[in-house]
Image (cartoon, rainbow, N blue to C red; front, side, top):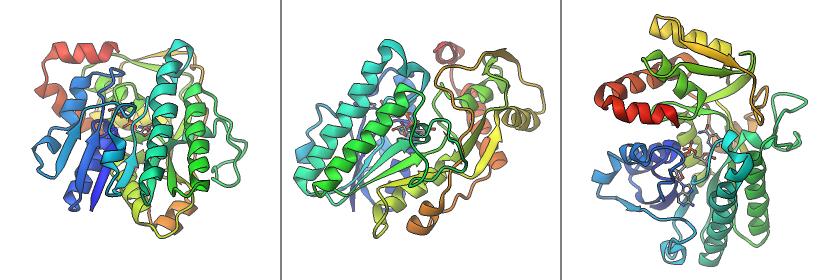
Length: 326
Ligand SMILES: NC(=O)c1ccc[n+]([C@@H]2O[C@H](COP(=O)([O-])OP(=O)(O)OC[C@H]3O[C@@H](n4cnc5c(N)ncnc54)[C@H](O)[C@@H]3O)[C@@H](O)[C@H]2O)c1
């Protein structure tokens, strides 16, 4: 089995590639190492993979990658590359979202259709829903009303995938809900909390702490993603939510508990683009993919905290200060 994984050096993509290698796949990973966060972190994410004989890295932009050649023998395609993050999508930053999300996805889908690839599994996001009127949100019932340009870009990718679906290219868009665990991106709240707990920057809490998220551990996301490539007739859009909804205040209390000390934090007003709540109905993922989340919030947070602690021990302080300032 052969797979092409875009965004292979990122948080989720690197875990996905490792699991595919463990399951016997040959993997070509594409990543351009965007500077959204330190590219050195992305090289670290690839640490194990670069020593694997069945893994090949193509350090290039999807917009320049030789996709016709890569897709010629119709591999499974896992498209995770994107400009992630809600806040940076406002203002001039949006051009990055157009390039790395909308244009890159359209180019990839076009090439997959031309090559006759069986299916593209791609990363979408809970951000497409915005603040819903009813929870949990359902793919076929809840209207999409993104609150950020990032969410609009993800929704646009879904619409483009539907166009290619009509032309004969099967695709499955997985709407991931707040993914966390070891290697989590440094801009994400749980990562910043774990860094603060281990002696890093004071955590800046945006809002009153009452905003809640449906948290999904990274190994569960990887499991759903691989299942989406194998499932007989999956729907074109599927929620992947861990089922562990918690407020930010609860997450802070859990990390304080695990760490045995109060967290240094400052409180600021909530930021534009932030939704109040996310919560997934995962009936489709359960029935069509045979998936269920395995890792609970406390266990998952313990794993992320341990990873942050180890990483801070093994890395020079200058490199960490650089990450914290981003
Ligand atoms: N982390 C989450 O909680 C979450 C939630 C919902 C959706 N998602 C989606 O899941 C996917 C993975 O997210 P992540 O958190 O691992 O992000 P990440 O930033 O760690 O990984 C994305 C990778 O894509 C690469 N990339 C970006 N544009 C590229 C291009 N044009 N060509 C080649 N490589 C490119 C980046 O260098 C990066 O390594 C993204 O599509 C993201 O939008 C993530």
